[in-house]
Image 1: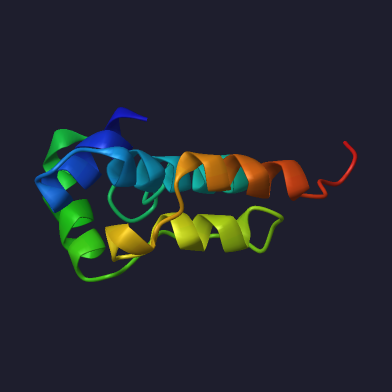
Image 2: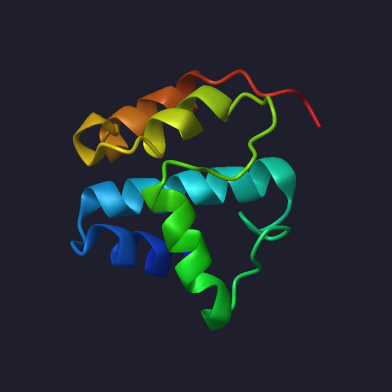
Length: 102
C-alpha cells in the first residue's frame, strides 16, 4: 500500500481525497490480481518509483482483469482527479456490486 501512496503523492504534488481514491484503485487492482500493481513491470522498491510515476503521468495504468471491480477501478484512477468519485459514491458502488459466491 505504501507504494500506491508515494506514487500518487509524487505524481500530484498534492495529497487529498483524490489521491486516496487513486490509492484505492490500486488496492482494487491488488484484490483482483492478488499481486502488487506494476509488480511485473517495476516492482515496488525505491529504485522503481520514478518508473511508476512516469507511467502514471503518461496515463498508463497496471493491468486490471475483468471483474466486478473493473468499472469502479477505472473511474478511481482517472487522470483527472476531479473526475474521480468520492468515497460516498465508492461506498454506494461497492454496495451495489454483485460479487460471485466464494
